[in-house]
Image 1: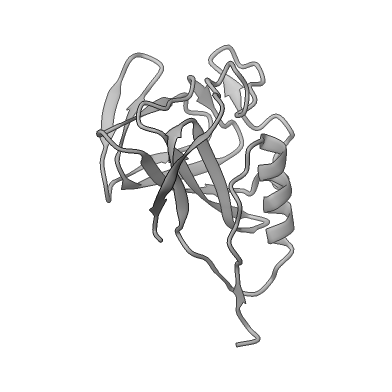
Image 2: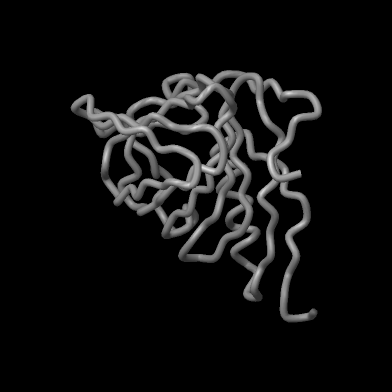
Length: 173
């Protein structure tokens, strides 16, 4: 099968820089890429695994410990969507709008929309995230807070906490 690339086990990214670097690396591939939806579950924190990318799109697997969350933010240059594969996510808008997105459900986030979410449902949250364009095709500031100021995804402001893996517990294994 010379015309297909099989992605090896992709390690989770721990920083915005490593996500951007992994997307840039994967976007160099011009052949169809196969990938697996596999990730270690968490007791604490969140992980983000880049599965595949082109210049115009990225595919990531996100895992949050139950109760894990992020802060109100927007991606001013990227349309993206989430599909919940395990657990549930309670999404919030800037005016306290709330919606629960459960297993096999999704939510589309057009660029510029403010949102935050928390993992609910009594188990770790696993979501597929697809965005366009790839972050390497966007300005370095690809996430802003409610004031319109840069906010790194791996910052304390975005409620980042140290990751603690759930021993022997995997999604998709």
